[in-house]
Length: 196
Image (cartoon, rainbow, N blue to C red; front, side, top):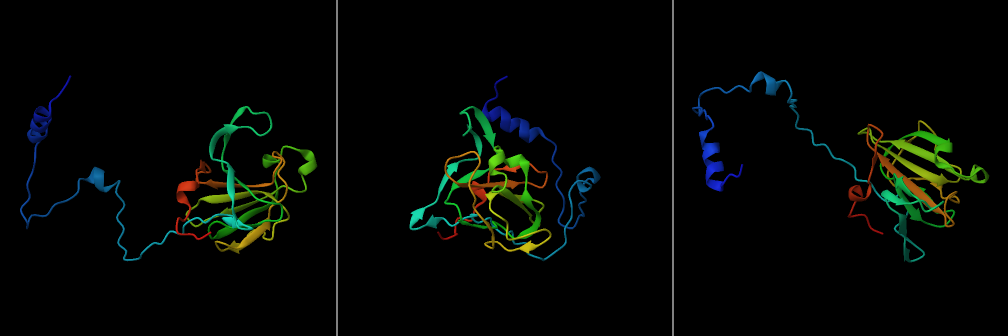
């Protein structure tokens, strides 16, 4: 059924409308009122932005994101795979900064991110939980400089980059996960005012 603009306008006008006098009380229907939270506060909530987990420039050169969030070709065998984070191409020993203030909930080795047994001692993981329930993960690290349940501030160095177990060049693998643990593309959430 095809409706013209005129016929759609007529349908809208035919909907019942109830006008209220200025002094007449109006109550929200209980079905709506029970699903809409009421917040009485004058407090301003400031949400801290995410900053890059490594410097944007090293030795005068821009740091490259060598693998993006989403579907990619596997570095191991070129087959398609889902990549749940970003890989920053940086040299071994590059300082890794926490992207947003929070609390360290894990710092150590995790087999989940390591493919090669010979890289086991060089690939550690740090997970930081943030106040909104989200978390950030930092992978392919040398010995972490933090431990649970340490509080950390955005920009604080938490480790340095180690060799990657799946690429020829060293990378920092960085993930952002929502409070349900689902991977989220961090690129749109990075602070655009952050200086290199």
